Image (cartoon, rainbow, N blue to C red):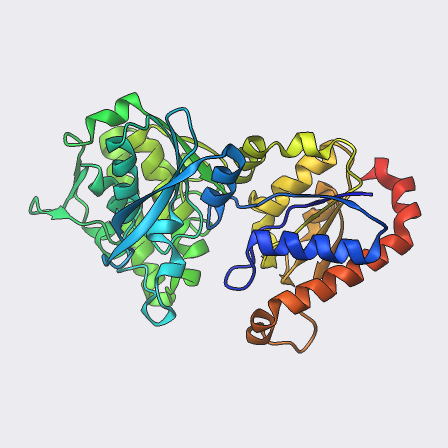
Length: 386
C-alpha cells in the first residue's frame, strides 16, 4: 500500500513534519511494509518557507526586522535558487510572535514583512514569493508598503506608520517613493483565502477575532478599512473588494496586488506545484491530510481543500485527521474526502489536547488505519465514485 502523508501543522502543538512522522509510524504498525511518502504542508502561513526551501534544496537568509509590535527580532527567508526568494509573512508579522495578552490588531503592523522584501531586493532577488498566512495584523498592508517607500498620509500630511488603528486616518497615498526595483521584480503571493477586503466576509470580521479584536474594536477597524479601501479606489481606480484574496493577512493581499502588482495564487496550489505532489499521487492508494481545526474556512481554499481536490483528480481517496472537526464541512465529501476524524474526544479540553498532541495524534492515526484496513476492499471497489 502506498500512503501519502500530507498534513498541515497543528498550530502550537504539532508541526507538519511531526504529523507526517507519526502518520508513517502508525501506518507501519497496521499495514505490512507500507510505502509512505511525506510532504511538508503549509498554505502560506507558518512552515511555508521550510516546505519550499526543502523542496527546492535552498538555503535560509537571516536578517533583523520589526515584529508586529515594532520590536526588533531576527527573522529569515529562503533563497530557493535562480534569483528566487521565498518569504513567509509569519516570520516577521505572525500571530505567534505576539503574546496572547498583547494581541490587538489595532496596534499591530506588517512593517517587518516589508523589511524582509526590502532585504531580498537588496540582495538581488527579482522573483519573490510571499506566503501571507498566519498574520497578527489588520493594517491593510500599510506597514509593509511603508517599509518599501509608500507614504500613507493623514489630513495634515503626516506620514502614518501603518497600524490597524490608523486606517481611518488615511486621507491620501503617495507612491512616489516606492522602491524603484519593484517594477523589475516578479511577485507571487501564496494566499490561502479568497475573502474581500471589507464586509462581513472581509479581513476584519472574518479574521479579526482570532487576532484579539472584540466587538467594539471590530467595528472601528472595519470603518477604517472601508476608508482605506475608498481612498485606494479614488486614487488608483481599483476596487480592492473585487480582488479575490484582498482580505488575506489583514488586507496585505490587497496591498501586494495594488502597489507591487503581485500575482495572487492559491497558497496550497503553489506549494503542491513546487513539491511535485501530483507526481507522487501516481500509484498512491491513500492520502492522509489534516490541520488543527477543520471547519467552514477549510473549504475556502486552505491546505486540506487543495490537497483533496488534487487527489480527487487522480481518483485517490483522502482521509482527514484533524485536531478537531467544526461546523460547515458539508462540502467536504464533494472534494474527495472519504472520512474525517478528530483527535479530540468528547469532554477533552483544548489545553489537554495540545499538551498531549503527539500521543493523541498517534493513537488516533493508528485507530484510523485499523478501520481503513477493515474497510479497504469496499474502498477499492468504490474508488471511482469519489
